[in-house]
Image 1 (tube, protein in one colour):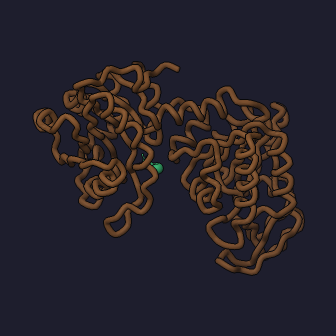
Image 2 (cartoon, rainbow, N blue to C red):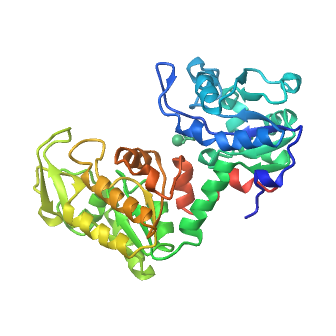
Image 3 (cartoon, rainbow, N blue to C red):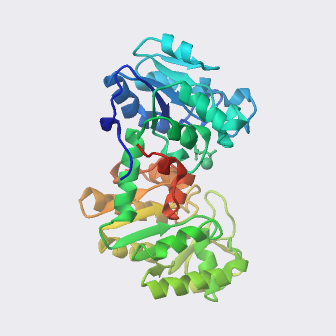
Length: 392
Ligand code: 3PG
Ligand code: MG
């Protein structure tokens, strides 16, 4: 791969500008999920161990080039300090002298890069300014690598650079799952809408052996086959597109697996009365909210002959009981097979990770990416600018 890791770099006495993604959920001034902060710890620890001074660059929310007090990164400092086990110096308006004057073992966090409109514009002036603050650039923000911004790509082009531990680990896991995978490869693709996953399906058809289609988007495929999906969420205007995808998959030898039976209800609310029907028997006044047990059994069979599973999107409306069952059951089966050493499982995307956490299986998957949009773009086969800019 065309990028360095921290192992390739001499960091002794160097200021290491480290792009991290600590775009974490916050409620009432407190970080409610520290996963992204926990996952940058190996990089910060290793930079310190190599004698470098980490200066973290990060965005938070979408302030659109304005100072927005609620989007100050200051709110992350207590969690960063607790996770890293050391003080973190927060600098609102950075300059080289302040960074130089900080103790050699200091960890520094700079205020939200998106408070300047030059960040998202990837303005060379901002890239040059950032580069002037450090000696080496380390990008550990895979989940922001789909953005070509001053702190992700611009600065990388101006300094010796490398991937951080989380970035390197993520790229290796994804390469193993889709670049040069152990076959057969099964992709599980769910979520509400086909319209947001067209590029994804187009790319996967040529790369994987089976695509399990779940969630609301499966309804569009069922309707395109002439089935009546009642009041289900369905993009009827995409029927031709869905048929086209099915044709291309057939030609490429990629099997599309649609639900055989489905869980339907008259209303979408917790505890709603639900029944299981065959996909061709959906009552006109009901909506599909989950895949049924036969569908899950079919998925389990497909997993049994697979070597690799790559997962993006839930199979049903998992946030609301009783419509979580198919997602949980399929995830639990994939996790058990992973634990037994029979399957490599890689998952990413906000909803997917939430579903796997709720199902209690996240620790058993081979790799869970903390990226949302970047994971999707990577699955679409796109080059991520933040990765492409790491030229060593
Ligand atoms: C994310 O939360 O998905 C990343 O931090 C990227 O954020 P963005 O979608 O605002 O660029
Ligand atoms: Mg996002």
